[in-house]
Length: 78
Ligand SMILES: Cc1cc2nc3c(=O)[nH]c(=O)nc-3n(C[C@H](O)[C@H](O)[C@H](O)COP(=O)(O)OP(=O)(O)OC[C@H]3O[C@@H](n4cnc5c(N)ncnc54)[C@H](O)[C@@H]3O)c2cc1C
Image (cartoon, rainbow, N blue to C red; front, side, top):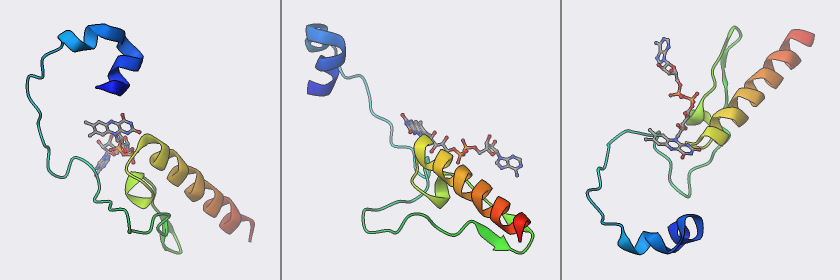
């Protein structure tokens, strides 16, 4: 609520919580002790990227895409 107040002001006090939905498997499994930056090359001709290779977020998906592109460029140069 405090964070919302920073964004939307005092009107937040008038808001009423309607309902919370927990959606199983809505995001890749990620826990604090898990390592991120997982490998993105499956074999000599197959690369993958996505939030499941880094952190389950837009930022993680973008970092993963960059890592995959860099890995591809390096491989194609060799
Ligand atoms: C409700 C919700 C709220 C979120 N809010 C935030 C937020 O506020 N901030 C944040 O940083 N992150 C948020 N996220 C997480 C963020 O949306 C994801 O981490 C990010 O979109 C993952 O990007 P991605 O490209 O790895 O995968 P996706 O965005 O899931 O893209 C994968 C694409 O592959 C397609 N696909 C799947 N299988 C196949 C197939 N066999 N053939 C062809 N195409 C296929 C899918 O249709 C999809 O378009 C949220 C996620 C959810 C579910």
